[in-house]
Length: 587
Image 1 (cartoon, rainbow, N blue to C red):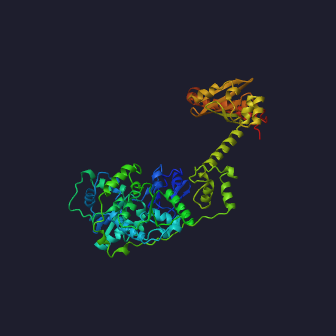
Image 2: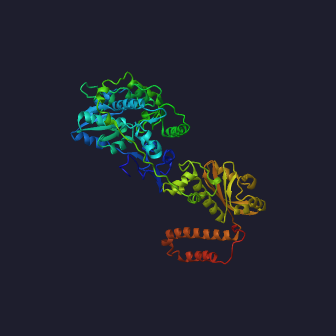
Image 3: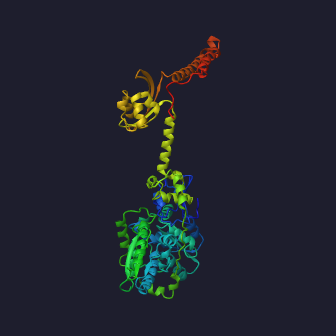
């Protein structure tokens, strides 16, 4: 596992289902030996793979130990509490939560929403200075910033030149309280862990709500029983409208609480796929010159906003979560924020540049060769079923060429391959073999089965090899045995008289109520007779030896003479030069 990456795979648990590939918007997954691993350079830490993994193989790095050690270091550690705590712990107000955090050992608590207020004011200022037709995109969500930088780098310079609310808050806290204090973020976001990794001088550690629950439980702190303490420090002040940031549209509401020039347009999009479509529309609008006024785009990676972050207890129930955040943010004002900001504007500055993921180029010939490896020789063979996790067979082929996918991820290819192997085995068996479905319609049979049925069936088989769809009831008078097995009876093994022949049949269930199979031999064939005599002789030897061992002490003789006699019978049949008659397998 790569513990340095906030998301990693427990490979021994991975069940090669490709569900993570299917749900990864940017396909940042490599499948090797049937196991799926996250590619750190491609990943944007949206957390979908963690959420959808049915085996729980996708894990999020646990940084709780690092946070505890920081508290034990003696530093003044400040908890940066994400405003989405209001929806994650409904009924727990800020004072009660802050008291619980101080009980864990934090020196003070600061609302991350206070950093959102800093950002909102600066965005309002930038929008007031924006020219007509210009576009600004929010920098609040690190997953979105990463997505644009890696996959839509042409828009990187459209991101507001401001740090995220967390980084803005952390920088201001360290300026106000000294560089010897440390900030620990607590929220629902995985990408904040990477933000802390990259900006360790500002944010020491980032833990998520699941970590916090574990910590509170181990400390025997039950939030509903916690009493708010008047001595708890909430620094430097309580947040304003930045408390609305966790819901889509909340950042826009916070920006509008400051004076913004009339004519600026605001739009909000959440969810990476919706954001990708929105950016496509932006390109189209720019190319057609449709943008006349400044436009601000609030972009959040999680559908509905941070209230549905990947480390939320539930990523559903958006209405109740929204109500919790709206209640938390109501009657908020900026307070003394203007004074706090005086002379500190440059602390919030952050430049964003594109770091585009290298495009994977391949020739048409290479692509065709990769497609042939999965049995696709024409466009008609490309089902685009999505079973491998990719939208099209060609996307899958490109991933194979890039070393991120394996041929056996193709479900249709593996099914055809298995079917070919099964069909080959059925054709090679000298006995007659048939498989039927619940309606007693033939699914597959071999030539020797048709031969046993007679000349009419052979003609049908020549016209349609396999006799797929033919009614078994019309071909075999004893089809009732198949129905019995389909209904749950044990396998049937018996000799049956049919067309002046004696058939030895074994009828067995493949899938109860769905499929049954039968293997038949004409015991009047010389090769079958020989095999049956040999088989019976071996059974006699086994039984005779067992009996002889029991009574040898009475008879005073051993079984050597009897065994030699029976073996001579077997050998006389096994070495006979006679060939099979009427049982040849058709080429």
